[in-house]
Length: 323
Image (tube, rainbow, N blue to C red; front, side, top):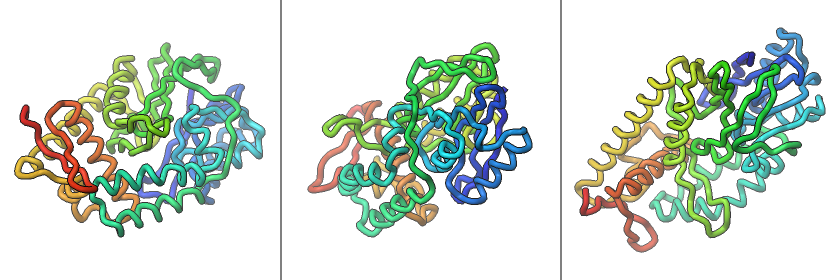
């Protein structure tokens, strides 16, 4: 059985959950960030279970965000363990800063079209530029994708690719016990943020991460999990109830945006400000807020109730005649 360990982080999200299987192959799922307090907490929790970092044989990384993967390089170096993750995550793990820089032109275009002020864009970029210090580079030994099977504690866990919160996020399903390792796909007390990410190919369509998130949330719920093991917070014991809460939240947000757009067309930035206001005060807050509002605009465009129109360099969102 997987054992949950809560690891402190320096981030506003608070502690991150990692999971350990002490049976051969000794497996750690996610790591916490490269931060002395995170490392100390992880080593102490493993020691209480008779495990040292050097004993880890298999390290599974659920997605590329630094609160989940920061210690992976050190653990792999100290243990020689095999690192497993989805292919999307590999370039981030190998060279996080290079991957971040590669994506900057995409974000510049989104923010320009969204009418985001230059000083806010600068704050977002400064926040992103600081992320690389929270992890060391690591090269995965095996890439896992939809349909892969992983052995933990003598049990078979099936891998599901569930992009939404992150493009390379995977969940793992143990059918006999109806247990879902959900990491950041199901979190009991906070709604997973659909992070804005660029296309997989240079001229490909932008991924609609909130659209994907809701689809995969319902797909995972359809498995009928008795428990979902989250990336943050407490174990989810009522998955259907959580899904209903999340769907209701996103429906309320859609209705709020429709109300804001009723009098006049608005930009992404204007909608973000009208929705969150003074609650957003830092670069990462603004990035997450804009990501979330863009996700809801994607839902409304998919519904056929909102469309975007170019006004010079910016896009303005407006209600369709069908609404």
